[in-house]
Structure formats: C-alpha cells, structure tokens
Length: 246
Image (cartoon, rainbow, N blue to C red):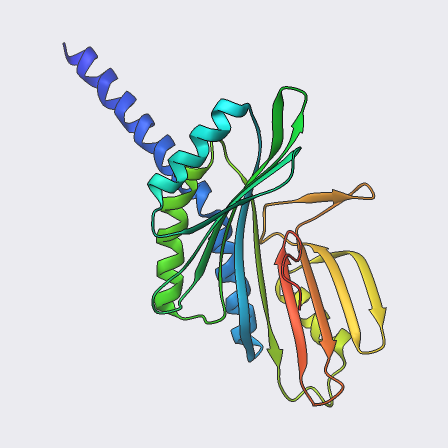
C-alpha cells in the first residue's frame, strides 16, 4: 500500500509539473515583450505601439469550418464578427476593444480551398498603444486564457513594439541600434544601413523563438529611423521578426 501511495504521489507531481511547464510555454512571448519594454525604458524611449501575435496552421473541411464559426461566435459574443472571402477563400474575423482602451484583440481564420479541404491558419492578435504595469498584468492573463482555447497545438509566437527616441540630434541611428543590440547581447546576422535608417537582424540569448534565413538563425530584429522633421527617431523591435509597420 505504501508503494502504491508513493507511486501515486510521484505521478501527481509529474503531471502538475508538465501542466505548469506547458502553461509557462504559452506565455513565453509575453515575457519577450517585457524584456523589450525594459530595454526601451532603460534607453529612455517612449512606446507608441505593442503587439503579441500567435499563429497556427489549420486544415478543415466544410463541416468543421461551420462548427468553428459557430463555436467562436458563441464563445466570444462580445467580439464583432465579419465573414468574407470568395469562392475559394474563407475569412472569419472577430475584433474587440477593451472598454478602457487598454488593448485590442483580433481572432481570425483564413483558409483557401484545396480539393475537399480548406488549408490556412488561425491568428490571434493582442495589441495597444499604451503600456503600464496594469496592462502588463492584463496581457499575461489574457494570453494565458486565450491561447489554449484558440489553438490545438503550440502556436508560433511573435512580439513587437514601436516607439520614439527623443533628442537624437547628436546620436546616429546606427549607434542607437547597436546600443540596443548590445544590451540584448545580440550576434548580428544581417545589417541594412541607409541614410538615417538602420535595420539589424540578430541572434540573442534572451529570446528562444528562432527563424532561419540564409543558413543562419536569428530571433530579434531592430530598426531605427531618424525623423527628418525633428530631432526624434522612431524605432521598432520584434522577436523573432517585426510584425508592426512603423
């Protein structure tokens, strides 16, 4: 009996550990967002936009497509839903803006007919234009709640922020981009430099979601552009890629 009780205790511990680790994995990119926010605060930048995005491929038939539509509309009645597409394409989008304008959400499924099935992806976006400790806590709870409901497996995760650096008259955009990359301890994979603009693609030990290009892996992109009409510079940082236009 003692052996059985001991075995059961170990089994319960392992189950809880796995469940805990899976839940942590779902909010991993929210942590990436916080890392980027900390770096911008350290460099006295002002955040003007942020976005978390999760994406997963999907293959469904006509019956499953109808079931998915009915499930989402029933599950998220506070969203505004729109359906579109042509004969071969199907798009279902739902949007919601939080009452205090802390964040906006978007749920979308986009598919194209391939013989008897529809192939495409499920997309979830969470973003806003303001950032605070309250918003950080709200986004963590939101991601932890929404991702297991929307996705069948672990989706690809992306995080991106945009903003402004003030008083950049005496600082070159390359200098500022390299400073941010240095804080991330990034190894530069690709560099693009033009007049008053620089873009760095790097591999940092602080981010784990990697992509591969030209036989090299990377997990963060940094762009800084000087504003010709002022002393400011606009920036964008994304992991593993930039997902917001700026």
